[in-house]
Length: 463
Image (cartoon, rainbow, N blue to C red; front, side, top):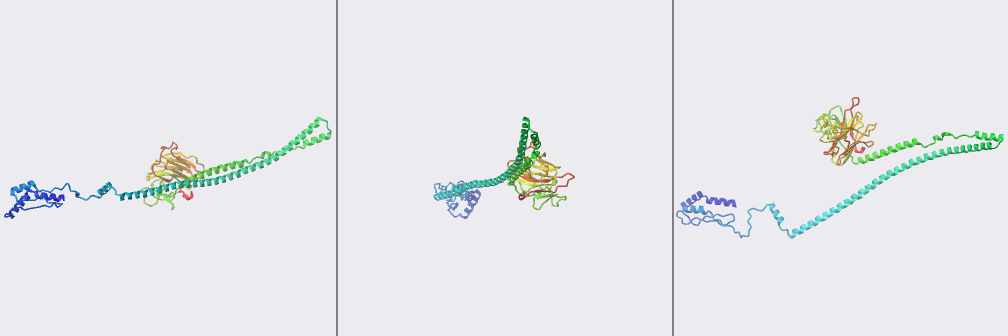
């Protein structure tokens, strides 16, 4: 409306246009005495300025140029609110927020808050119930564990009693034999004493030749008991074997209990086929891999190791505790460890080999030596016996930055990487900063040995 008013005003006040219009009107209305009225209507319908008299050419043009159009002003006292544009939704919402809520709105809001309060109280009660249920469930679990260990203790107690009874029986048999020998020696002692008394009587008084012969014959008839009592003793050889057996059982039981505890954190591992070197063949179930003499014709993948015969697991470790085992009995030279995904895949330098960089940790067996590697530094593993390792256990506590390699048969620690690790390795107080992936690698054996054949992540059901 304002734009239209502006255009009309400019049209009526332009000098050339007004002069031309005045001349045209003067020619058409020479006989007329009355001036032409012209009105302009504004947007609100209010009448504007009017020409009242026909002016002289110069006077009319001058007056028209000076006065222009006269507009009727808006009444300031008018109660009507003039809004050239309707309010936007945003302004309407803002006005609604600032407006005083009605009684109905307040009542409805109270009802909504009461309903929300009821829901919140129900949720709090549900959480408290769950908390109590957790405590009760944990107590039930503890009781079940106590019962199992109590059963184990009963079995051990029974075995203990059987062994103690066997020792007691051995003691009785030995005592019986010794009592028999002791009785013989007592009889022999009595005979010797009796003979000695008889001889003393012969010396104290004269005796006849018949009594002397009788005393001499009694002394000559004395016979010592058999000296085989030296062999009568407890079965110490059996006892030594028993101690060795008990020691073995204790170690085996401790290892089995420790392994069973670690197996609670075990998870199935599948080999990432995209990471395998082209000389590696993955089994159908995806847990084992074999070394092949011929390369796979498949196209090379960007994540594939092209020079190192290595493969990574498909599942990353990002938190908590994890345990798995690798069967290495069918391989003569191997490496088992963990690595970041940033481990290099191309080339044959230390950046792509397990344990030769900061992105990986491993234990490896080669040339009959078992060593632990990290950041291209190594140390001989402790606790390794004469028997080759058949399974390697790997335990990771990601949150605490701990990594432990075990001989899975007896749970002997091969190497431990943690805040208390040996100073051979740097970054002693490290934490894991990236997801960890299980890793296995084939190593080249000596010339007099065959190439390694098979490595496998053990299935959880066979652990």
